[in-house]
Image (cartoon, rainbow, N blue to C red; front, side):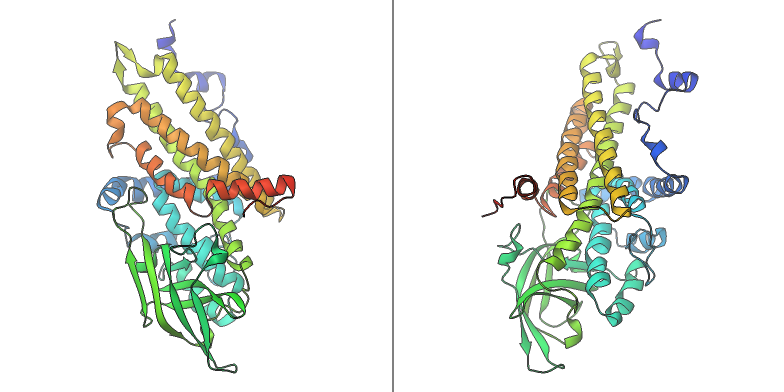
Length: 406
């Protein structure tokens, strides 16, 4: 029998071999409940995202019907307890992020901004009134939040932010006046509430700014080559008057926003592997069906080498993400571990997506196939919530004990 006659799927069934796309049998490390949840999110992605994602990406629009569907699915603020939040495990949230990003990074980004950033800030640092007002509706997808930290001249260095909130009066009833600008703020133009980080005379503090507040403007950033099925905005605050109830009482200094960023980075480590897996599967399926020089592309050594190299990184990255999830559920996950996973998994996912595109040939530059869309999206994922360089410096400081940021 020639190599062309081999059927990996049949061999798997006959000899009880592992799934050829899960050689390490990582599924065996998941509980039955985790497998059921993953399948539910995968089915949602297949039915509600894949059929339309190419059109959304091409037109540069975020589908406004999705938040309510994602709320019903139970993935908004998925890791949070109480206030109508799902209260699922870290591993379950990671699996959801992976399946959603297999559909598109922009959709997973919405879930991250809503849950890991905006909702986490309110849940962790907000007053009881703020939690009760916003979290149940955000978990249901009825209300959209955003997280305004990055500025036009303060990206990787948020300590240099210029947005300033000065107290308007004295005493417990004194409000605030907010001035400044933010950039690359996801969902800002469609948000019902903004979590805004600003410098004050008492250090960096967080504020809740409802949509429609006088002096606030949010303009979507156009002509993007990445994250086209998502919304990022320039936001300005011009003499915005806020009541005392706008202040997030528990957040002081950069530890507030940084704790939220680490929640998002954790989800990114999982999500990137979803984009990588989808790119690999697109290339594998194409190679199996495409005939060149009288035989299947999958039968050529160069093609098989590419597929093997892609699968190596997907298996390793998924195992890394799962390990972090177990650590997080045990309360033992550290920031430098998250940095390692975000740095590694996004970097490798980009390589996988680009390599997958080469198997697709010229057809791979169209939106009929996902790898190049994933590769473009992952350039944004590589940049937000800490660039490669920032995470390298975080890890370098952990290794040597010497900070090298300045």
